[in-house]
Length: 315
Image (tube, rainbow, N blue to C red):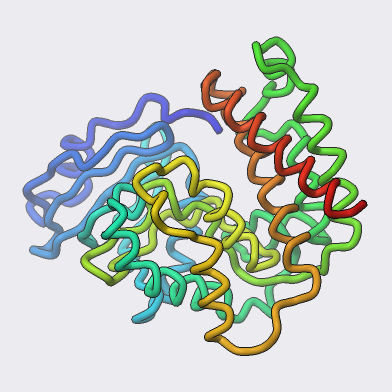
Protein backbone atom coordinates (compact mmCIF):
# COMPACT_ATOMS: atom_id res chain seq x y z
CA UNK A 1 0.00 0.00 0.00
CA UNK A 2 1.19 3.48 -0.71
CA UNK A 3 1.76 5.36 2.49
CA UNK A 4 -0.19 8.49 3.29
CA UNK A 5 1.73 11.19 1.42
CA UNK A 6 1.33 14.95 1.70
CA UNK A 7 -1.80 14.91 3.86
CA UNK A 8 -3.65 18.21 3.83
CA UNK A 9 -3.40 20.57 6.75
CA UNK A 10 -6.37 19.30 8.72
CA UNK A 11 -7.17 22.57 10.47
CA UNK A 12 -7.08 24.50 7.21
CA UNK A 13 -9.11 21.88 5.34
CA UNK A 14 -11.82 21.64 7.99
CA UNK A 15 -12.05 25.44 8.30
CA UNK A 16 -12.40 25.87 4.54
CA UNK A 17 -14.78 22.95 4.08
CA UNK A 18 -17.08 23.47 7.07
CA UNK A 19 -16.47 26.98 8.32
CA UNK A 20 -18.22 27.80 11.58
CA UNK A 21 -20.02 24.42 11.55
CA UNK A 22 -16.80 22.77 12.80
CA UNK A 23 -14.92 23.17 16.08
CA UNK A 24 -12.58 21.47 18.57
CA UNK A 25 -10.36 19.69 16.04
CA UNK A 26 -7.85 17.32 17.69
CA UNK A 27 -5.52 14.64 16.34
CA UNK A 28 -6.70 11.14 17.29
CA UNK A 29 -4.04 9.08 15.60
CA UNK A 30 -1.67 9.01 12.64
CA UNK A 31 -1.08 5.61 11.08
CA UNK A 32 0.72 4.52 7.95
CA UNK A 33 -2.35 4.70 5.73
CA UNK A 34 -4.53 7.42 7.25
CA UNK A 35 -4.67 10.22 9.78
CA UNK A 36 -7.70 10.72 12.03
CA UNK A 37 -8.97 13.76 13.91
CA UNK A 38 -11.88 14.24 16.26
CA UNK A 39 -14.00 17.37 15.93
CA UNK A 40 -17.51 18.65 16.38
CA UNK A 41 -19.61 19.13 13.26
CA UNK A 42 -22.87 20.95 13.87
CA UNK A 43 -22.30 20.09 17.55
CA UNK A 44 -22.17 16.37 16.73
CA UNK A 45 -19.05 14.48 17.82
CA UNK A 46 -17.39 13.29 14.63
CA UNK A 47 -14.16 11.94 13.17
CA UNK A 48 -12.47 13.02 9.96
CA UNK A 49 -9.85 10.80 8.32
CA UNK A 50 -7.47 11.58 5.49
CA UNK A 51 -5.92 8.91 3.27
CA UNK A 52 -4.73 7.93 -0.17
CA UNK A 53 -7.37 5.30 -0.91
CA UNK A 54 -10.83 6.70 -1.39
CA UNK A 55 -12.24 3.25 -2.16
CA UNK A 56 -11.50 2.18 1.43
CA UNK A 57 -13.54 5.09 2.76
CA UNK A 58 -16.31 4.27 0.29
CA UNK A 59 -16.43 0.71 1.67
CA UNK A 60 -16.92 2.19 5.15
CA UNK A 61 -19.91 4.06 3.74
CA UNK A 62 -21.32 0.86 2.23
CA UNK A 63 -20.93 -1.02 5.49
CA UNK A 64 -22.43 1.70 7.67
CA UNK A 65 -25.80 0.74 6.16
CA UNK A 66 -25.54 -2.62 7.92
CA UNK A 67 -24.99 -1.25 11.42
CA UNK A 68 -26.89 -3.14 14.12
CA UNK A 69 -26.80 -3.85 17.84
CA UNK A 70 -24.50 -6.84 17.25
CA UNK A 71 -22.46 -5.04 14.57
CA UNK A 72 -22.20 -1.33 15.43
CA UNK A 73 -20.62 0.61 12.55
CA UNK A 74 -20.30 4.40 12.71
CA UNK A 75 -22.43 6.23 10.19
CA UNK A 76 -20.51 7.91 7.37
CA UNK A 77 -21.59 11.52 7.07
CA UNK A 78 -19.52 12.63 4.08
CA UNK A 79 -16.65 11.55 1.89
CA UNK A 80 -14.79 13.32 -0.88
CA UNK A 81 -11.49 14.47 -2.35
CA UNK A 82 -8.72 16.64 -0.98
CA UNK A 83 -5.87 18.27 -2.86
CA UNK A 84 -3.70 15.20 -2.21
CA UNK A 85 -6.07 12.31 -1.55
CA UNK A 86 -9.40 11.65 0.12
CA UNK A 87 -11.33 12.33 3.31
CA UNK A 88 -14.22 10.74 5.15
CA UNK A 89 -16.29 12.06 8.05
CA UNK A 90 -18.16 9.68 10.33
CA UNK A 91 -19.89 9.67 13.67
CA UNK A 92 -17.48 9.24 16.57
CA UNK A 93 -17.45 6.05 18.61
CA UNK A 94 -15.67 5.55 21.93
CA UNK A 95 -13.92 2.67 23.64
CA UNK A 96 -10.67 0.82 24.14
CA UNK A 97 -9.11 -0.93 21.18
CA UNK A 98 -9.71 -4.68 21.14
CA UNK A 99 -6.03 -5.47 20.60
CA UNK A 100 -5.02 -3.40 23.62
CA UNK A 101 -7.18 -5.31 26.13
CA UNK A 102 -5.60 -7.31 28.92
CA UNK A 103 -6.57 -10.92 29.54
CA UNK A 104 -9.57 -10.11 31.75
CA UNK A 105 -10.82 -7.53 29.27
CA UNK A 106 -10.57 -9.93 26.35
CA UNK A 107 -12.25 -12.74 28.27
CA UNK A 108 -15.16 -10.42 29.12
CA UNK A 109 -15.73 -9.28 25.53
CA UNK A 110 -15.17 -12.60 23.70
CA UNK A 111 -18.85 -13.66 23.66
CA UNK A 112 -19.83 -10.31 22.18
CA UNK A 113 -16.96 -10.51 19.68
CA UNK A 114 -18.13 -13.92 18.50
CA UNK A 115 -21.67 -12.58 18.05
CA UNK A 116 -20.23 -9.72 16.03
CA UNK A 117 -18.41 -12.19 13.78
CA UNK A 118 -21.68 -14.07 13.34
CA UNK A 119 -23.44 -10.83 12.42
CA UNK A 120 -20.78 -10.02 9.82
CA UNK A 121 -21.05 -13.42 8.16
CA UNK A 122 -24.87 -13.26 8.23
CA UNK A 123 -25.06 -10.11 6.07
CA UNK A 124 -26.79 -10.98 2.81
CA UNK A 125 -24.32 -10.66 -0.10
CA UNK A 126 -26.19 -13.01 -2.44
CA UNK A 127 -26.66 -10.30 -5.08
CA UNK A 128 -23.02 -9.21 -4.91
CA UNK A 129 -20.34 -10.72 -7.13
CA UNK A 130 -16.95 -12.38 -6.81
CA UNK A 131 -14.53 -13.35 -4.06
CA UNK A 132 -11.63 -11.75 -2.24
CA UNK A 133 -11.25 -8.01 -1.70
CA UNK A 134 -14.41 -6.27 -2.85
CA UNK A 135 -14.87 -2.83 -4.37
CA UNK A 136 -17.31 -0.10 -3.27
CA UNK A 137 -19.52 -1.44 -6.09
CA UNK A 138 -19.66 -4.65 -4.00
CA UNK A 139 -17.82 -6.84 -6.50
CA UNK A 140 -14.98 -9.15 -5.52
CA UNK A 141 -11.78 -9.24 -7.57
CA UNK A 142 -11.85 -13.01 -8.24
CA UNK A 143 -14.23 -15.55 -9.71
CA UNK A 144 -13.55 -18.18 -7.00
CA UNK A 145 -12.46 -18.25 -3.36
CA UNK A 146 -9.54 -20.47 -4.31
CA UNK A 147 -8.07 -17.97 -6.79
CA UNK A 148 -8.57 -15.18 -4.27
CA UNK A 149 -6.42 -17.06 -1.74
CA UNK A 150 -3.70 -17.95 -4.25
CA UNK A 151 -3.45 -14.30 -5.32
CA UNK A 152 -1.29 -13.75 -2.22
CA UNK A 153 1.84 -14.49 -4.28
CA UNK A 154 1.09 -11.89 -6.94
CA UNK A 155 2.58 -8.40 -7.10
CA UNK A 156 -0.25 -5.94 -6.40
CA UNK A 157 -0.60 -2.18 -6.93
CA UNK A 158 -0.64 -1.31 -3.22
CA UNK A 159 2.38 -3.46 -2.37
CA UNK A 160 4.61 -3.31 -5.45
CA UNK A 161 8.00 -4.99 -5.51
CA UNK A 162 7.57 -7.03 -2.34
CA UNK A 163 8.95 -10.22 -3.93
CA UNK A 164 12.32 -8.65 -4.74
CA UNK A 165 12.56 -7.27 -1.22
CA UNK A 166 11.71 -10.66 0.28
CA UNK A 167 14.35 -12.34 -1.88
CA UNK A 168 17.04 -9.96 -0.65
CA UNK A 169 15.91 -10.00 3.00
CA UNK A 170 17.60 -12.03 5.76
CA UNK A 171 14.53 -14.29 5.79
CA UNK A 172 14.49 -15.02 2.06
CA UNK A 173 11.80 -16.78 0.03
CA UNK A 174 12.36 -20.49 0.76
CA UNK A 175 9.80 -20.81 3.55
CA UNK A 176 7.32 -18.55 1.75
CA UNK A 177 7.48 -20.70 -1.37
CA UNK A 178 7.21 -23.94 0.57
CA UNK A 179 4.17 -22.73 2.52
CA UNK A 180 2.58 -21.37 -0.65
CA UNK A 181 2.92 -24.79 -2.28
CA UNK A 182 1.10 -26.34 0.69
CA UNK A 183 -1.62 -23.67 0.42
CA UNK A 184 -1.98 -24.49 -3.28
CA UNK A 185 -2.64 -28.11 -2.39
CA UNK A 186 -5.11 -27.24 0.37
CA UNK A 187 -7.24 -24.80 -1.62
CA UNK A 188 -7.99 -27.43 -4.27
CA UNK A 189 -10.51 -29.05 -1.94
CA UNK A 190 -11.80 -25.98 -0.08
CA UNK A 191 -15.50 -25.19 -0.46
CA UNK A 192 -16.41 -22.12 -2.49
CA UNK A 193 -17.98 -20.48 0.56
CA UNK A 194 -19.03 -16.86 0.19
CA UNK A 195 -19.76 -14.67 3.18
CA UNK A 196 -18.60 -11.25 4.30
CA UNK A 197 -15.25 -11.09 6.15
CA UNK A 198 -13.87 -8.00 7.89
CA UNK A 199 -10.27 -9.30 7.77
CA UNK A 200 -8.70 -6.61 9.96
CA UNK A 201 -10.14 -6.90 13.46
CA UNK A 202 -6.86 -6.77 15.39
CA UNK A 203 -5.46 -3.52 14.03
CA UNK A 204 -7.19 -0.96 16.24
CA UNK A 205 -10.38 -1.39 14.26
CA UNK A 206 -12.69 -2.62 17.05
CA UNK A 207 -13.69 -0.38 19.94
CA UNK A 208 -14.75 -2.05 23.19
CA UNK A 209 -16.42 -0.86 26.37
CA UNK A 210 -16.67 -3.43 29.14
CA UNK A 211 -18.13 -6.58 27.64
CA UNK A 212 -19.60 -4.79 24.60
CA UNK A 213 -18.36 -4.02 21.12
CA UNK A 214 -18.96 -0.30 20.55
CA UNK A 215 -17.79 -0.03 16.95
CA UNK A 216 -16.23 -1.96 14.08
CA UNK A 217 -14.39 0.38 11.74
CA UNK A 218 -12.11 0.37 8.67
CA UNK A 219 -13.55 -2.07 6.13
CA UNK A 220 -10.86 -1.43 3.51
CA UNK A 221 -9.48 -4.99 3.70
CA UNK A 222 -12.91 -6.63 3.79
CA UNK A 223 -13.37 -9.71 1.58
CA UNK A 224 -15.97 -12.10 0.26
CA UNK A 225 -15.13 -15.70 1.13
CA UNK A 226 -15.37 -18.37 3.80
CA UNK A 227 -16.48 -16.90 7.14
CA UNK A 228 -14.12 -19.32 8.94
CA UNK A 229 -11.27 -17.11 7.74
CA UNK A 230 -12.14 -14.71 10.57
CA UNK A 231 -11.73 -17.47 13.18
CA UNK A 232 -8.41 -18.47 11.58
CA UNK A 233 -7.20 -14.89 11.95
CA UNK A 234 -7.81 -15.07 15.70
CA UNK A 235 -6.01 -18.41 15.89
CA UNK A 236 -3.04 -17.11 13.93
CA UNK A 237 -2.55 -13.85 15.82
CA UNK A 238 -3.36 -15.06 19.34
CA UNK A 239 0.26 -16.02 20.19
CA UNK A 240 1.35 -12.47 19.33
CA UNK A 241 -0.59 -11.18 22.36
CA UNK A 242 1.02 -12.69 25.49
CA UNK A 243 -1.54 -10.98 27.72
CA UNK A 244 -4.17 -13.34 26.27
CA UNK A 245 -2.16 -16.52 26.84
CA UNK A 246 -4.49 -17.61 29.62
CA UNK A 247 -7.37 -17.90 27.13
CA UNK A 248 -7.57 -21.00 24.95
CA UNK A 249 -9.02 -19.28 21.91
CA UNK A 250 -9.61 -22.51 20.01
CA UNK A 251 -11.56 -23.97 22.92
CA UNK A 252 -13.60 -20.77 23.12
CA UNK A 253 -14.36 -20.91 19.40
CA UNK A 254 -15.37 -24.57 19.64
CA UNK A 255 -17.66 -23.75 22.57
CA UNK A 256 -19.29 -20.93 20.60
CA UNK A 257 -19.82 -23.11 17.52
CA UNK A 258 -21.33 -25.84 19.71
CA UNK A 259 -23.76 -23.33 21.19
CA UNK A 260 -24.88 -22.38 17.68
CA UNK A 261 -25.87 -26.01 17.11
CA UNK A 262 -25.04 -28.51 14.41
CA UNK A 263 -21.99 -30.64 13.84
CA UNK A 264 -18.74 -28.94 12.78
CA UNK A 265 -17.90 -29.35 9.09
CA UNK A 266 -15.80 -32.41 8.31
CA UNK A 267 -13.09 -30.22 6.77
CA UNK A 268 -12.96 -27.68 9.62
CA UNK A 269 -9.31 -28.34 10.52
CA UNK A 270 -8.18 -28.14 6.89
CA UNK A 271 -9.98 -24.85 6.35
CA UNK A 272 -8.59 -23.28 9.52
CA UNK A 273 -5.05 -24.39 8.65
CA UNK A 274 -5.33 -23.13 5.07
CA UNK A 275 -6.53 -19.71 6.20
CA UNK A 276 -3.84 -19.41 8.86
CA UNK A 277 -1.20 -20.25 6.25
CA UNK A 278 -2.69 -17.62 3.94
CA UNK A 279 -2.61 -15.08 6.76
CA UNK A 280 1.05 -15.84 7.42
CA UNK A 281 1.92 -15.50 3.74
CA UNK A 282 -0.01 -12.25 3.46
CA UNK A 283 1.90 -10.78 6.37
CA UNK A 284 5.24 -11.92 5.05
CA UNK A 285 4.38 -9.95 1.94
CA UNK A 286 3.42 -6.91 4.00
CA UNK A 287 6.40 -7.15 6.35
CA UNK A 288 8.80 -7.45 3.42
CA UNK A 289 7.21 -4.48 1.68
CA UNK A 290 7.52 -2.38 4.84
CA UNK A 291 10.97 -3.66 5.82
CA UNK A 292 9.78 -5.05 9.15
CA UNK A 293 12.46 -7.74 9.38
CA UNK A 294 11.61 -9.10 12.84
CA UNK A 295 7.93 -9.45 11.96
CA UNK A 296 8.89 -11.00 8.63
CA UNK A 297 11.00 -13.67 10.30
CA UNK A 298 8.40 -14.45 12.93
CA UNK A 299 5.65 -14.75 10.31
CA UNK A 300 7.85 -16.97 8.13
CA UNK A 301 8.58 -19.30 11.04
CA UNK A 302 4.97 -19.48 12.21
CA UNK A 303 3.70 -20.06 8.67
CA UNK A 304 6.09 -22.90 7.89
CA UNK A 305 5.12 -24.65 11.15
CA UNK A 306 1.47 -24.44 10.08
CA UNK A 307 2.36 -25.73 6.62
CA UNK A 308 4.18 -28.71 8.14
CA UNK A 309 1.16 -29.41 10.34
CA UNK A 310 -1.08 -29.37 7.27
CA UNK A 311 1.22 -31.77 5.44
CA UNK A 312 1.31 -34.10 8.42
CA UNK A 313 -2.48 -34.16 8.73
CA UNK A 314 -2.82 -35.10 5.05
CA UNK A 315 -0.50 -38.10 5.23
